[in-house]
Length: 169
Ligand SMILES: [Cu+2]
Image (cartoon, rainbow, N blue to C red):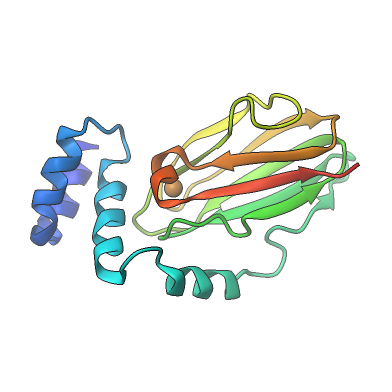
């Protein structure tokens, strides 16, 4: 991880003061991504509405669509990329077993997915703790109660990388 961080910082020397402040803040494995995040926020102003709009428009077919696998489990795939969005940020499943895959198609950014503790109608403890660029991981869990389950990329929570899985009634 340190090797990667040095390489990326070497490519963008202008971000070094930010990198130093992020290191001082004691961040975890997402330091590099957070530095990139901070740099992008500076470049695009607050909110970054334009990149968000572009990413939303580019949602590929099949992503975010809930289908039923041959074993009867409902499946859905969410993507992350080199921004601070889940694509899509909202999807709906039926009560039952859910197989959720997150594909990180980013070239540089690291993400994760965790259901926000105590925020949904029932706990979902399964999580994807780390997705390197190009990586894809799947978790499976069961939901029974209708309602909204907010989920976050904990690395980029500050810049609003959140989503919602709704369990239909
Ligand atoms: Cu993230």
